[in-house]
Length: 113
Image (tube, rainbow, N blue to C red):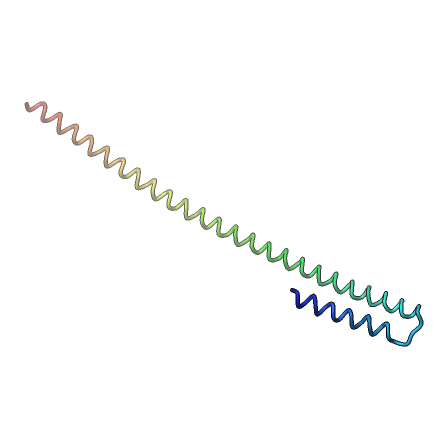
């Protein structure tokens, strides 16, 4: 970034020195300086707008990727949650069945005694 700024400052300095040392009248020199300044200002504005556009585009791409990753993570979370819920329900039913069998065994044993 610094080298770009130094390069640009060097170019501008060279242009100004070239214009000031050229054999012209004061009005012509001022007009030429104004023209060059306007031209460079327009160039810088164009570069700025391109840079802003690129940053906005990059930001939109990043938002899109983050959204995609969030959706993928949410889907995976829901899948794991469903699997855990199914396993919990299965174990709950197994425990309930085992409990009922024990109760039935105890009741049968109590009748026999």
